[in-house]
Length: 61
Image (cartoon, rainbow, N blue to C red; front, side, top):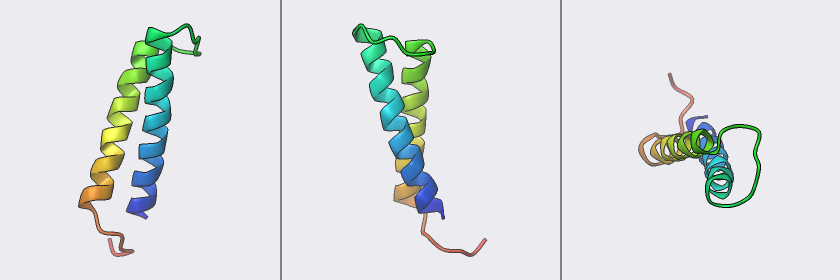
């Protein structure tokens, strides 16, 4: 379950990071502030990578 959450966070963070960088440096208009989207993308991406690297996928609590 934790690996699934880590994968979702990594993918969502990567998409948010790409959209944020394109909004900051390009002419792409996104629905929210591009800098905020970039920062959230960085946070989600590194959180997902950290979950994938450090946690074992077990159903035990």
